[in-house]
Image 1 (cartoon, rainbow, N blue to C red):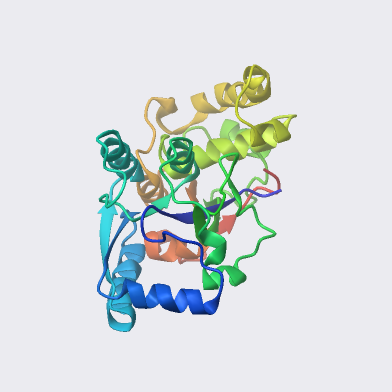
Image 2 (tube, rainbow, N blue to C red):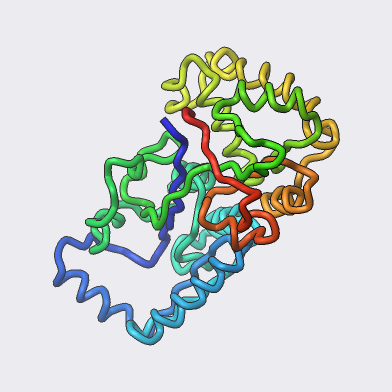
Amino acid sequence: MRRVRFCAFLTGLLLTAPLCAADSWHIIQEQAKGQTVWFNAWGGDQAVNRYLDWVSGEMKTHYAINLNIVHLADAADAVKRIQTEAAAGRKTHGSVDLLWVNGENFRTLKEANLLQTGWAQTLPNWRYVDTGKPVTEDFALPTEGAESPWGGAQLTFIARKASMPTPPSDPQGLLAWAKQHPGKISYPRPPDFTGTAFLEQLLLTLTSRPDALKRAPDDTFAQVTAPLWDYLDKLHPLLWRGRKRFPAFTCADGYLLARGSLSLSLTFNRHMRCKKWPAVNCLPTATALVFTTG
């Protein structure tokens, strides 16, 4: 199964009661008029930033809601702020109402009982959510209505056709290509979101016990993850700059691809490639691909 990620919103104080019908939602809309909502979101993508700024204006125009966007360098900063406020006894009227979150941060907040639950499935637009996807579980935890997906993304490789005319379709193919072309591939240094996802992709493909990854780590962790470490021991010496340095973040990885230092880069949205790195990715010299498993 191909690895698919879902971007999710979490809510703290915006919704305080289950909504069961259209009439109930109308009441919520009326009560929300004139209120201010603080939405904390990763601000590393200018296209997304412009979209959220547009949404903020639409919320003001059509619903009389002041939606303030807080652009974050790292969503973990908002998580720490929530934890600090809770520790100080401020468990209502905090500085974060909505948060764009990944699985790790979701788990941190949910295990600390810092999330409002039971609201996601009551949203009118939940009927458009593909519940055949893993939208009710995140980081091996049931979401219990504490987060709602707002988009889907899949780990995608962007390759230079000239140097990689037949891109690899699995980790072993990638390793074989790296042995023939040392120094031409890399990945963003974790905890970068895309770099971490690359390691997850490898682990899901290489382990003989993928079902174990759906549960919290136990005493079998070393055995389950051993194939990943063995693979990285072989791959890392072949990476850009001999593994002594990794791209600090996804855009740096794309920049190295654009200038020819790398032959392969990573992204979470193949349709965003022209916007991020038009110098190389909008030409016939680049192609998008995914692993067939993982």
